[in-house]
Image (cartoon, rainbow, N blue to C red; front, side):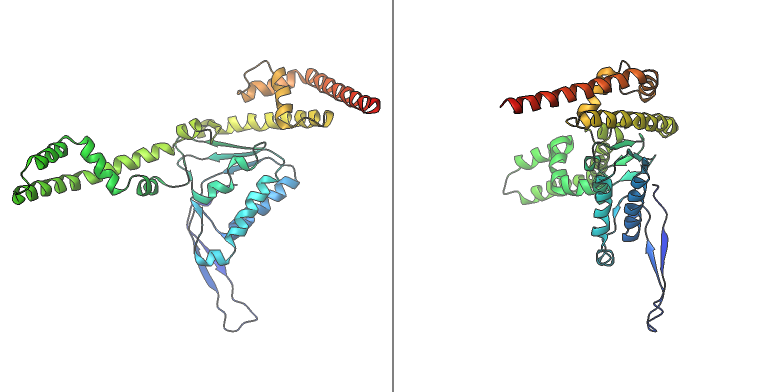
Length: 314
C-alpha cells in the first residue's frame, strides 16, 4: 500500500435518471483517507488475506477526512472496516514510515500494531515522524500562552530583574509601575516567538523515530537506503517462522503464538534480532526443528493420555 501525497480530483458523473443532476468534481487532499480510499484499502486487505500474502504499508497519512460530506459518506464505517480487516489478517503486516513521511490522527489508530500484535509490526525511517497531533497542535494544548509567560519569567534574567524592580517600587508610584509593566510586556512580546519555536521543536522531538522506538510504538529504525534488504530478509524469515509456529500449534493445541515462538527461540543459537542470521539458522537446522516439533507432538499426546487415564481413574 502506498499513499498519494498529491492533490487529486474525484469525478462524480451526473445521474442519467435525473435530468436536474449535474456532474461534480470533488477535490481531495493528499495524505488523507476519504470514504472511497478507506473502502478500497479495507477491500484490498481482505483480498490479500484470502491470497495468503504478506502486506507492506508505506504509512504517510495525516488523518481522515472529517467534513460533513465525508461523515454523510460513512467515513467512520469505512475506517472501521480497515481495523476489522487488519484484525482478521493471518499473515505478516509491515508498516513503514518512509523518509519525511508522517502518520497522524485517526490514520494512526487504524494501523496501530496493537490491533493484531501477532502479525503487525511498525518501522520508521530516521527522518519520518509519527504522533496523533502535530507539534503545533501539541503546543497549543500543552504549552499555552500563560505557560509560556510563566517559563519566561522563570528563565529570562531581564524579566527576573524587571519583576524584582516592580516588587521594589512603591505602590503609590503608579507612573513607575506602569513604565516597568510596559518594559515587561515589550520583553514578553520579544520572547514569545522564540519560546513558541523552542516549544514546537521540543514537541517535534517527541514524534521522531528515536523517541517512538524508546516508547515501544515501533520495532526498529530502518533507513530508506537499506530498507529493501531489511524487509527482504524479514519477510523470508517470517514466512519460515510462521510455518514452524503453525506446525507447533497443530502438534500441541494448548500452545498459543507466543509460547510456540518461545520454543523456536530456545532452539536458536544466533542473534534473534538479526533476520538474516535467523533465516540462515532455520535453513541449516530444518531437521532439528522438525525433530523438536515431533517431540512436542509426542509430549502433547502423552499429556492427553495421562489426562484421560486420570479421568477414568476418578
